[in-house]
Length: 264
Image (tube, rainbow, N blue to C red; front, top):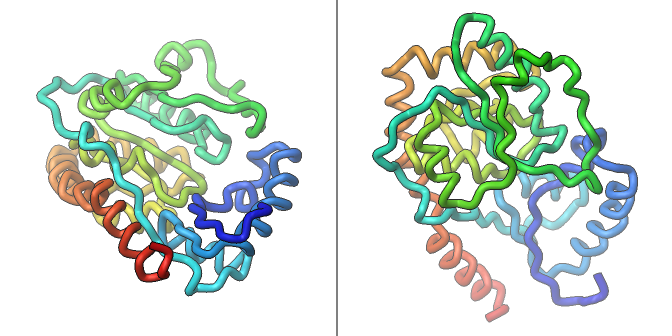
């Protein structure tokens, strides 16, 4: 904050877009800090065009000062010769705006239709930052089919992506989506929210849902499971799309931009 030659990377304005998900202390600190850091920055990298537009709209950051730099994923994420198991996978932090509540409601509907599946949830939550969620609607019977796996290393994640019937992310807000790209790279079809950042990243290689509608989430999961033609098409296109997000590409573009700005 006190240095005048910053190059920063911004991952979005989630505490402003979904303030109900964050503690008051965290929101006040970021509302104080972020505008000052942005103002002093020589250059601001963002992880998507959506993120760029947000900074221009909310903080009036100059267009010339912002450059989109898509992150990459590790080469470890790839298809493996593993058998599929009867579970749907969620990967991400357990933040309220990740919308796990509606995911669980959708999963409950899916189970009610006779699908004998489990929901496996990978991720952790920092209670210092995020508010607690009320999952009292999850009864003991449904709870027995939901597994919280905690944090997983990449090696374990690769296996989970390869074994899952699909990845589902019903987020209310995102600016990129590492699990989406990782899953696609592993040949795992994805069911994701119809929000701008996901559309930008996944394009036509995902099944999109209204994250506010649990029944629509359930129906999309049913489609992925029942429709082999749809599923195989998403898998094939997803593997190709994921190749656009490599760390080699990211680093090469990063260095090119620094040279354009005369920084190196």
